[in-house]
Length: 123
Image (cartoon, rainbow, N blue to C red; front, side, top):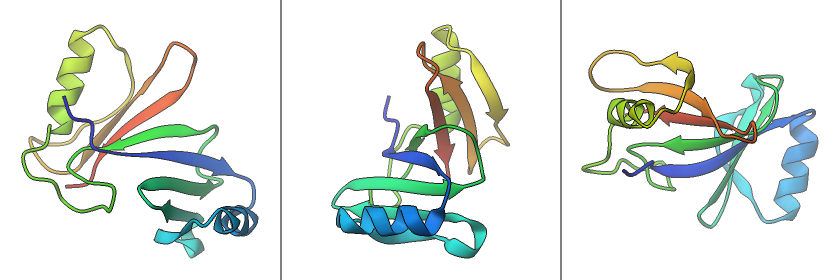
């Protein structure tokens, strides 16, 4: 089971302050849209999403079908197969955004300590 690219999505209070802070840690803007209150920042293979007023709490994010550069990966495990496997293991899905039989879809789970995990396929 391959979960795809990993990042942490941070719920930030002030996008500009957070951007400036992570730039001091040598992260640079990799994606996102400041006008829509989110930025994706990258340092090497490390990815951090900064999201202002979009959700509460931080989220561990996995992107099936993507590598750490948001490049498409051949032969990846589709989000639907991940959904089926995890639910068959007794893991409760707390948000089900599954759509169609292929392409973009997502779902969320929560670990035993209350940490949100988003499985978000864009391809």
